Length: 107
Length: 122
Image (cartoon, rainbow over all chains, first blue to last red; front, side):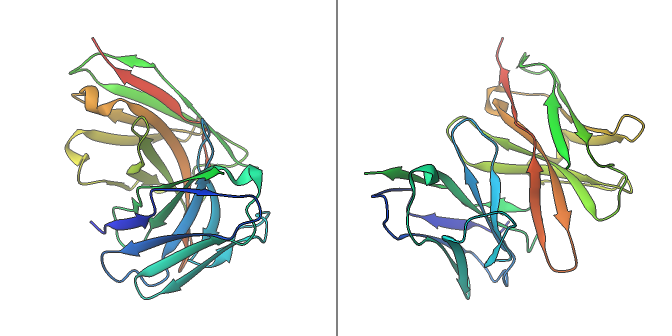
């Protein structure tokens, strides 16, 4: 299985801050990576697909990028409603696998 | 718009079989280009993909669960189901069904059901 190492596991930031989460794949997955947001008690929601494409309806403060096996998810200006856990997911190889998640809190 | 809803018992005894159904509305599970997946989340933990069924009926299971999992579909009811045999407390989790969208180069889960908590306990 492809292992996805996500960091940090938790993060505390202030409203308006730039927030960055990283995900490293255990092998080359090209750009076959998605990012999801999960709010407490809710199902995950797709934010970014193919490493850098914004899903329809998702605010433009969210973005993603890729460099080799390293992937970055960024919120350029943190909003209170962004409090959630964020997961990366690779789909290059089956089984599809997720990172362990990053829980974002407001300072 | 497509919506998914899980249903099934919230409590299962150890060694028994967990059975869940996902009812799809707003679209047909027989439509090509879509896989229909199950994903679970242990309490306070991350996400684990269980497997999928394709519109053709083909299935693929996560090797970690393959010996205990069956995913099937009832196109007449627009539903797909999960069976997990010989459950233990380690199978206690929130179980989600999701549409697994696949194109030539892209793939993602969207939308998801709301999830259902299944507790394994005697």
